[in-house]
Image 1: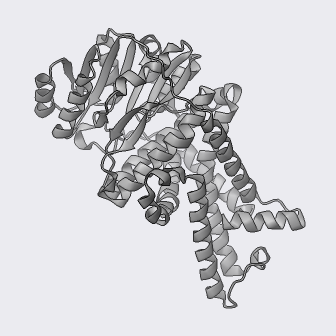
Image 2: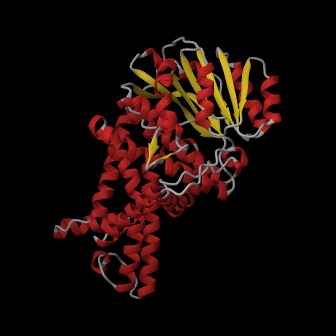
Length: 441
């Protein structure tokens, strides 16, 4: 934020254009657009009835949590609940499924969520498919509220509002809950107003069954950079719904809770998987988005480019501090005379302004959880120092068919074959970083 202010000031005084300032102006403009659109959002209120099949792929889940997941779903009386245990045989999960009335279950030795969904869809009989992650807990009325938007025949897919279970457990779970709150307050309502929620978050997604059956072959065989990627099934399904000509919606009155990693290593693996999946889907979907939903294309392209610009900015600022270049930009600031004292003051001011910027753009959550204000500097540090490098690593690894990462031996493990095209994202990422640093971002 500090760099944006001083570069914007320099533009006003000298007319010189700074790419980073332009990028930040775009980010703030998109935030304003999201806020304006989100204020127009209204959930569907009128009741709507349809037959529902709940589909639950599961592998390596904690038995106690899975038992509660199933119990809460069955309480809401869907027409059928189909569980597919995939990967190694799991007697504990099988016993739970057999003990819960109304649950139909099967086992497949082939690991992978997509194949498990295929098996469930082949057995399903209802009009609406509700795909549920095996660690997602429904609340009262989740299903009743979730199907209401389907009263609009143009809508093909719907997702819920999502929060984290017991977020007070650690800083990481508080941060994860904050991110979910931001998404539920800004991005999802805004995109829902446009009818183009770009990713229906996979904890609980409702899809018209006829659409799901139609897109299943593409869902199971789609390739990117020469390989099939198992990750990001929710974003892939959302893409296929949109490309089929349907709208996607967010239903804020349908609430679910999900778990979040409390260990840093597991969080990093989860975020890396999400980063790979999100960005490869953005590139695969980009031609369609540019033609049909340019606003969505802008949102996702910015999400991809910003981490590179930020890392390049850090490198450029470090070089500037070491060599004294661009010092005139910060001449108007009341900095100490000493070189390192000035650098430390500048870093501190940058951190303060970054925290203020984040609190303004994403502060609605703090109206509901004011105690999280104390954690805002930590949240900002996680976003900047952890999430941004992970986003870049995810971009670089888009051509690798690696495993699921957070389900241990029971999860899809990837093919781990050498893919010659895997070098392309590395070259593209290096080029983006080089250009960003070269133009003095």
